[in-house]
Image 1: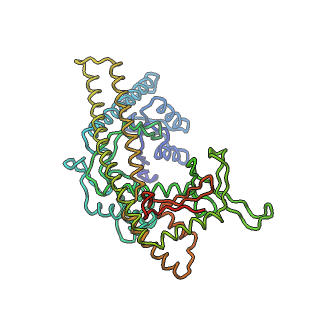
Image 2 (image 1 turned 45 degrees about the horizontal axis):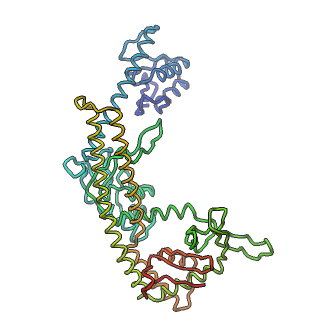
Length: 482
């Protein structure tokens, strides 16, 4: 309400919501004021400001009439007669039709803009500003770009949590994109997930279904290239860590297990589940933690391994790796060299696939233009057949791109080695003094090693990780014990 009632003033209500909605904040406030204080007339500038749908218009007018107020419109000059009601319905229907046409024209214009390679989406992402003369329609804002780079570095290389990053930015007095002095925790993953910072974004990803947004088929997305702010490897590593955090939160058991999510069957390659038998059953004095394979869960056989027996075997092998820093680095660098070659091949292939995807999107646009051209006279059957072919090819390319991207996220980096070496040195110094790390510290080391524990049908336990090289190489850091 823009004015206070009393002293001859007239309450006024401004509604920023669409007139397609039945329930709107300011309209509800006007109804509430009618019930509390009462008034005779609700004056609306034009009919389409009240509603663009005949049913909604009739419903709202009845609401006000039942409470003792009539609705009058400045524009329209509607009579209080059956003919006046018909005119209202017709005007509301035409307003609804015109709004649908306006939305359709706007959507078509935005699609054309996106297909021409220009950013569409309202406010520019943090780190950019709208500039039609820049690549992709977005110009890099240097000061904000440094903050974006800092956020990725803190998360990937320094191991900061999302909350710690938000707190640090706030304490440093760095302003967020929207008004305010504090960074919210939720704003950090939005930046980390946004592909625009690595050089591209998509338009036409979602469509509206009532009040909900539904993701469109991947083949309908329109890719827009922009100037990147961060390197691909840094973005990919951020996605890997975000996914790991998500999986850890989703499958984290109530009790702590040193090897949660790390134990696999050599035969069927399915993971072992964690399980605890509480104390007090079958004369058990303490809780018994186990790792379990179950045939009824789709595993190859039934097997239960005691955590008390398995975890020391795994930790002894990890200690052997940590106490030999030369072989730790040698094995890691050998693996890293192989992975860098894989990374280069994947990136080269991804660039080829992305060019192919752009070509297919252009082909799809051209096909539509040909179909609507009256001079060419393409039949609907021919159009649908070629459209289905293009969409199938696009879906195949997109699936391959997603697979390559997932594989890239799981490749080791130099930052992983440096972090591991620092932590391993601390552990070595403590082990020399007969120090036994806490279970949480042991788990951190296993995570840095990206360890996997394989159990065979013969009971053999194999510890492996990113440090695997050819079995004939003496620097291989995989080992087998009983």
